[in-house]
Structures are given as structure tokens and as C-alpha cells.
Image (cartoon, rainbow, N blue to C red; front, side):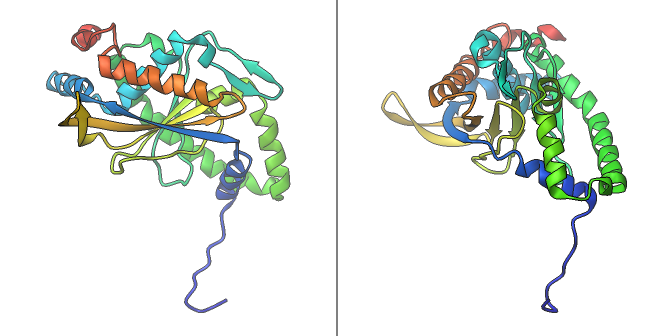
Length: 262
């Protein structure tokens, strides 16, 4: 090995995470849609002026939940040889850590929770999730050697992935991941049916009625499991989210009613 190269072996937790990524290589399809975030930006400013810590990520989570609730055919997950259609909406949100696989905060019944309630729950549960994630990594570092072979770990992980409840608890039906410093992010699919990649909301010049205008826009990416959704289904999901965000219908059909949950 050349002297100028430093080599560091993966610890047992990192090996388990790597194997989890390897079994998650699903047949994915990617769709991107541009969304006018003018009303969403106004809502964010209104809420922050009232002291609520609401972000665009919260709006995306809320809009995705409403899109699934309004279209039950989209609220589906494949596990093993069966499709599962939950009667409630479960959304997962990636939470950044030092690990190369982010833990996911799973929000049950996300469609029933007003925007402010949703944001509060995510904030309150974040530290607990990070602590649980760190405990899991410590256990894997200590005991991961009990299954020393990569093929055996992948076999066990595949068995777990065939269980609907396990996948729901790990990732939710739909997952949201947000990177605010880039214009567009194209995420990978793991256990969920689809992952929404949320980039930076910024001012851009767009055509409005044939004339150039400056608008706050977002490039929203949907990477979906092609075994569950075809291209038209993923398109329908993105268009539903776009309509909800651009119309301000992310809570009781009007941005002015968001504060009703206070």
C-alpha cells in the first residue's frame, strides 16, 4: 500500500449500514417538477412572525401527506409478494447525522396533523431519534461481529425488508429528505415507496403569462420504486403536491387558517 494512502476499516455498524444500502438497489424512476413557492413563502413568514418554527420541509411533509390521503391508490407499499394499502398516512423524514445513512423520523397519521402540530412533533422527537440511532450504532459496533459475513447480513436484512410493519416503522410509505444548500437533490429509494428530494427554495426568473418574472421556486424530485408506481403514478403524486403548495391548501384549504392549530 502506498505510504500516502491512509486506510481505515469499516467498523461493524458501518458494515451493517453498507449491506443495508446494497440490498436497497431498487428499480427506481426519477421525476422532477418545478413549484411556485410564493404562497408557501408567505405562509412561512407569517408563521415565523407568530413564533412558530416552521420550515419548507414541514410544508412538503404536510403536502405529501394530504396528497396520499386524497388519493388512496397512491398510499401503497410493496413487501414480499404483496401490496399493502394502509388506511392511514405515514411519512418518514430523514434527519442528518454523522453517519452516512441518516435515521428517519416516522410520522404516523401525518395527514391528520395541522402544520404547526406537525412541525412541533418533529422538533420534539428529533433528539430522541438521534439518541436511539446512536444507541443502535453502538450496539452494532459491539455485537455486529456475531454475523461476520456480508452475505449473511444481507440475507437477514432482506428478510426484514419483506415485512410490511418493519418497513413502515423504518421509513414510512413516503420519505422526505431535504438539502437546503443545493438547487436539486435526487435521493435514493430504500424501504419506502418513494422519496421526495427537497432542494433550495430560491428566487428564480420564470415565465408568467408569457413575461419574465421573479418567483420563489422549488425543484421537487420524486424517486419512486418502479415495482410499485409507474411513471404516471409518480407524476400524479408530484402534480398533487404542486397543486397543494401553489394553492395554499396545505392546511384547511387556506394559508390564513394554518394558525388555527395554535
